[in-house]
Length: 370
Image 1 (spheres, rainbow, N blue to C red):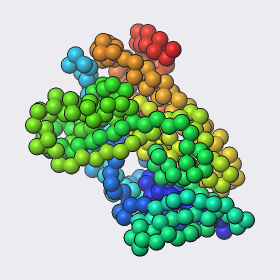
Image 2 (image 1 turned 120 degrees about the horizontal axis):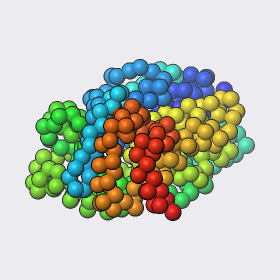
Image 3 (image 1 turned 180 degrees about the vertical axis):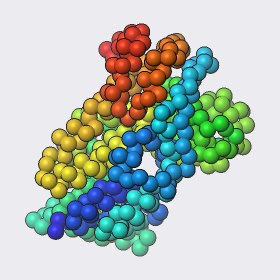
Image 4 (image 1 turned 120 degrees about the vertical axis):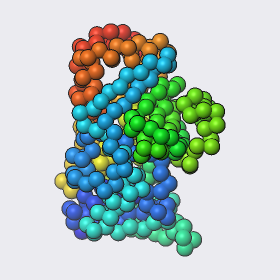
């Protein structure tokens, strides 16, 4: 029986552990934090393809459903998109623990408070060096296959020489007391965007994901949206890095693999990566169990949509205020609006040409790709 060690118990790591355990592999998961799913570094928005990627119909971790997104232009104008299929807001701690429990029931073994330090190869396989933080000792663990699901700054990627040239969104997310009408709000920001996402009728997650000046921009946004005394309304603040997709990313080297944020699999448009983590888990499981090229499967399953999102982000990063003002005005036209309301943001290839045909003026922004 092949032994597999997975570093990281987020969605990518635990879904991979579950799928591989079902295939009969001996799976061990090492998580550096004492509690799976904490600290939270994600808003938890997932679109309708989520259930298919998850491979199950379960809502036990869903805290809200929202069918309307309001996008604001710098001039104050806005447009509402009412989606055919509502977005789900998942409790990330509950969701991560749900996936881990599924993996454990399938046979995976979990160790929390275990920090991956590095690895070496010998004739018997791969020898991991792990710091048992709780017991304050260093242990060794032998495995045949190593999977890095350890986030955007993946130590596994660094140790394997697969880290590459990485860029990041800096995400900061205050949880704020606010009576709301259950609409997601999105605002443009320099090299990113700001948002207000309701958790329930009186609490929202507000924040920013940007490649530069995130803290400065967030303060300006919070004052404008919640008032100069916004800090009195803040319950707590979450945050972390999100990788910007790298089309040249290497995700497999011999018996070492990368999934989820460790493989830079996050959408450059919205910084979302939950569905991409689940798809990556499926791909790495197929590659290992059927002896296929994970690099090829990863590109086939994720590359196309991620490339389009990256091109869109490069364009958005060059936008001026007037560009955003024009786009919000153009997308109010019924044909363009309907296309976006009936399409998933996770699959831009399915609507990008339709939206251009519905509103040809959008082609003028192709100049920003140069």
